[in-house]
Structures are given as structure tokens and as C-alpha cells.
Length: 583
Image (cartoon, rainbow, N blue to C red; front, side, top):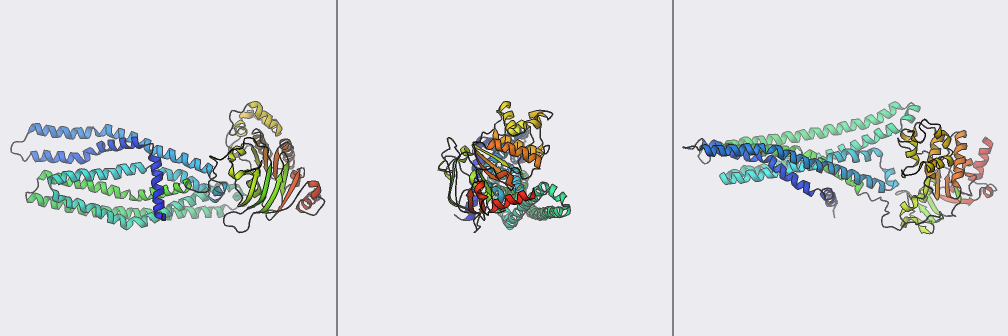
């Protein structure tokens, strides 16, 4: 299948999914907009008959009243039809937005962390917010412009064919002319709207980076440098937007002129036929009303063509996420019934993307359950990558990671991760209470268990001193807490999960001496009886581990007890001696 065909097929499939449960409302919306549009297309017929009554030798008052009543009814029914139409339309449009946002959120949860590392938050926000807002208008464009145009052509063609078939020639010319104009602008508008969408995503990325880097920017006096970067993105959006708007206006003006000229020619032809006695004055009024309405309808349809291109770009933008192949698939895989925490790495190698040099190379290692393994080595040696392999964020390109004798790449990782506790260098908190943050994912947790976890994490004293205790709101990302307090809350959050596997990733590196003492004591409590992986630059954090693994350039160069490693020259022994000398 060629690329364009594949793109069209994906678009059709997504549209089909979005409308699958909205067929009833769509049918109702089409029915009611038909009634709503009835005056536009049927009243000219009524008016023509009323005018022609004036030319009859014995005008019929009863017939006049009939046509007047019909015309009045057509207008009066427009109001309830419009209300019913909008009621169904808003459920369709808002339903599409709701369904797409849910789909995207589910997909973002399923996509691997490698995917998220390659795509900026700003770009994903644009897809989830702006693109979906555009797609919400898709049913309105299709029904109000596409369907009403086709309905109008059908009604007017039947009426004119009945009165004067020859006049259909003018109507037959209108559509090809519109198609030619649209064809001339199609590719340029498609490219322009694509450029505009990408520039919007780029600007969104720059804005997100500016906000997240604000403390670093201000600390180094780089406000002007950062502003130049953001301004470049904003100016890019401006230029792309101006180009697209100019193209849209040129397209609209060209369409309007072409249809206006054809309208005048049609009116002249109709009057000439009237002069010849082939049609009545009423027919002229009716034909011209039809042509004017049809021209306006077609003109409106052509005006929204740029919106159609925007809609298609937004559709493809959403499909980029929904069809992204980098998924973590768990459904249907066997689960871990109980986790003991026994790990074995068998000739594991891993590299990112197309990189030729592996980050982890032919690593074999065994970690018995309930023991602690510290992972050390110079920067870039593969420590964080090894932790990602342990959690299952990534999988080996060669070799296997076995948990309790089972290849984790073949298992439902959700059943494993429920038994994992992670404490990282920069713990993330949301703008909620301490209770909500500690019990994250398990809101039914009792206060007793939360306080017990806080006590084990050496966090109960400062929580008790807070104005509202567990109900104290800690602010977005814990901005009302010190670094040590945040780390101890993160440890408590790990404890309440009763993890069998504990991941400590630079858990004390950003702390002062006093805070480190509290956190280190808390970690020693938590590590008891749990399989623990520790990555830390501070030797004090790793010297009490059962074993220490030393990585260099992705290779495991040594793995032994701290006491045995101190007997030889290696990264760990040198680092410990440097630490002792500094003290």
C-alpha cells in the first residue's frame, strides 16, 4: 500500500471509530438540518408560484392563501428544527473531543518512555488540545457545508429540471469551476497548513522549556538568550500564520469573483428566456434565487476548504500518537502472581535508537532476592539505563532480564511494577494534600498505614508539625517542602506500596548533610528484606550495600562486596578514598 493510501485508510478508520456510537445522533442531525434548510430551498418555489398568480386572468385567493401558509410554515418550523439540530450536533462534536482525549490519554500511558523522551511535552499538548479542538468542528463542517450543499443541488436541480431543463447547464458548470479553483490552491494550502501546525508545535515546545528552565535561566542571567529562542518560535508562527491567512483570503476572493460572474451570466440568460416567452417572471425569480443560494452555499463550502485542510492535518497529527508503534503491550501476557525479587541478567546488551555503541554491553549479573546491589561507575557508564532495564521501561536488544526466572519482556509488567517502589533524585508531587501524595494510586489507604509509612521514612515529625497534618496541601511539585522533606515523603510513598523491589536513583544526591542523615536512615529501614538497586554518586549511600557493581562504558568490570572491592584498585575504592580524604 502506498503512503497516501495508507494515510487515507488510517483517517477513514479513525473517523469510523469516532462516529461508531454516534450514528443515531448523526442521522437525527442530518434530518433536522434538512428541515432547518427547507425554507432556503423551498420558499423560492413558493414565491415563484405567488408571483405567477398575478399573471393569471382570475387569480385564486384560496391558492394564494395556500402558498402563503406553506411559506409561513416553512419558516416557523425552522426554529424547533434548528434547536433539535444543535442539540444533536453538540453531542456529536463534544463527544468526538471527549473520545479523542480519552484515546490519547490511554495511548500516552501505553507508549514507552523512549517515545516520551523523543517527543516534547509542548508538542503532545498541542496535539491533545489544539488539534482536538479543530477536530471537534469536523461534523459541523461536513453537515452544515457539505451536506447542505449536496441537498441544495438536489432540490434546485429537480425544480429547474421540471420547469426548464436547459437551465441546468449553468448549474452543471458551477461545480467544475469550483473544483478547478480548489485544485489550483489545494497543494499550496495543504503545505501551508502543515507548516503552520509544525510551527505551533515548535512554539509550544519552546514555551514549555522556557517555563521549566526559568530558575536556571534566571540564576545564570540568561533571560535575553531564552527570550530570543522563544521569540524565534513565536515569530515563526506569525509568519506561517500570515502566509496561510493570505492564501486563504486569495482563495476565498477568487471563488467569490468566479461565482459572482456566473451568477450575473445566469440572471441574464434567465431574463433572455423570459423575453422569449419560454419561462415566466416567477421562474426567473425562482431560478435566480436558486442560483444565488447555490452560489452562496458553494462559496461558503469553498471558504471552509482551508478549515478542511486544517482538520485533516489535525487528524493526521492525532493519528501520529494513536498509531505510534513504540507501545508497551501488557494485555494478554501472563502476570507475576507473587514477586520474590530474584533477578538475573543474561548477556544483556542495549543501545538507544540507531546508535552503534551499546550503552549496556554483554552484561551478566545475578541479584538474589532480599539483597541490595549498588551500581557505581563514571558518568555515562550505563547506570540509569540498567535501572530502566530493571523496571522494564526498556528491553534488551540482546539477552534477557529474568525476574524470578521469567523473562520480564514476556510478562505483564503492571503486575510486577505494583511490587516496585521508586525513589528518585527529583521526586514529583502534584498540587494536593500530603495524604493524597503519599497514598497516590490507593486513595482508600487508612491513615494508620500512612502514618506508619511516614514514621518508617522519618517524616512523621515534620508532618505532625504542619498546620493541617496529613491534609496540608504541599503545592505544585512540593514547592512548600524542603528537599529532605520531599525525599522522605517520596520514601513514604514507596513504603505504602509494600514493595518487594526497591529502586533508589540518586535518592540523596541533592540533599544537605542533615537531610541526608535523615533520608539515609529512612532508606536503611526500607531496604530491609527487599531486593534493592541503588545508584548514587555519594559513596556513603552505597558502602553498606550487600554488593557493589561497577560499570564502565556499559561493561560490568567488577561485582563484589564493598569490603572485597576495597582490597583492589577500582572505581569504588578510589571514590571511597577520595570521599574520606575530603572529609
